[in-house]
Length: 247
Length: 247
DNA sequence: TTCATTCGAACATCTAACGTGTTCGAGGTC
DNA sequence: GACCTCGAACACGTTAGATGTTCGAATGAA
Image (cartoon, rainbow over all chains, first blue to last red; front, side, top):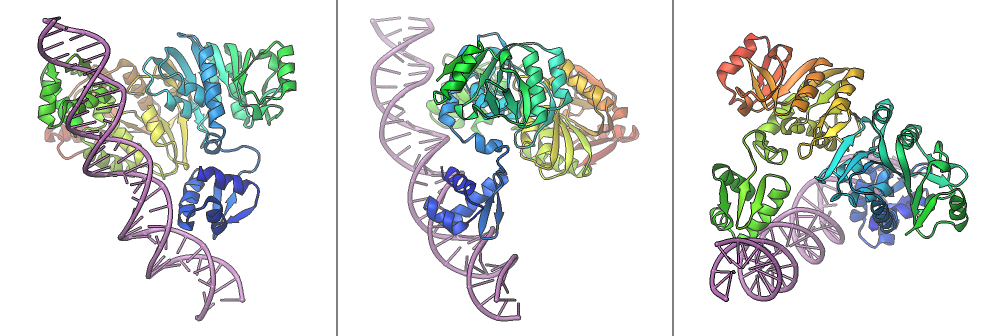
């Protein structure tokens, strides 16, 4: 909780003094310092003498921060997506924080899963009915997503019933997009290797277009998102034949 | 502690009653039941009405159990092996519990690492100077080791300075061996793709030969083990030109 | 250099979480 | 039907973690 407040305050100002932060969150400066320590280790800010500076450049929010944001919504989306999967299916699970909540709902299901990040693989490590196959590849620090030729090779030799993808941006016009070129390529390969494509995103991603283009909206079968999704986008998606579920 | 006692008692008898176990460890039956719950989830035993039955068949001890055994020794071996690696090297890290202790000593080192199990990958997830590349492959439940054609393919396209291997059995005569055929094949491929082979094993593995043969002792450059290693084996290894370090 | 400020180690305190034991009703087993 | 086992629920004690305070050292500005 306190961490969220600190990050939020940092987002709107350059340099915020330790004393100021202590006042805002209502605790001692020592406690703030300890908070700043862990947040710095997570790469969410940089400490300077007497203050903290945000490292969030506006491009890509680090995983540690995203995983804390809108958790309730992501859990609901995760449960809904889990409900779309049948026992025995082979599934690709993307690496984002929303899809991670999907994975958490699959621990007692019988599935074959190919996770696209270590976070997701970790969530399923104790799931003894899940047959897990890793694609391999370079592990992006922080994000812990798999990228590179090794990862893409996995989709040359395997086929899947369903791909569950997250996205940094999504719109009916430009389709799915990601911040990182490597990740975009992997998502793209996952789409090509899967019979069905399910997109799990919270409503804030709508209308945004990120750097790396993954694919057009036509290849998407189902979109699961929350009710705050812009009506116009939802309508356009439905016109394009995409099933949209608001949870 | 209590868990070790329970497992030890189970090893020497078929079926042990809950009441008996409570007496041995000196606590209530309810506590024993709770212990049995977690041990069953770890796959170390099976619960039956009124008692517990060992699942340890004598072949392969589950990872959860091995990771608890001889921890101090494994830590020492881990530290010694970490000292053998130079900054900037590319390293294969095997999946066993001994090599896991090597990985724990590498978190602040600058290396390229290919882990052969999720446990090891996990230990290095926060190591921001370590470039981690995963081989991919099937994830063996419990063990969380990577096996199969996808894993072996990784060694077709990559070469390494050093392979750090554990083993289920090791002797100067029969060389390295593993319990699982798939794991044996992966270890074998790792040896072929690496310029130097370091074996990290505690002394109890000496003289044992497991089902799957990995390779002859000639390909091993260094063996790191503890001082309880049988002298005869050590002498034979040194005769074969293997450097043996006792820690 | 000096002075003011910030930092973090060390200790004290408090709280929440965990482990443990007891009780008791439900569900098995003989 | 009698007996036993199980696990949920509650109570209790312990402990680890979080927080605040103090103080000497380190840092930066004048």
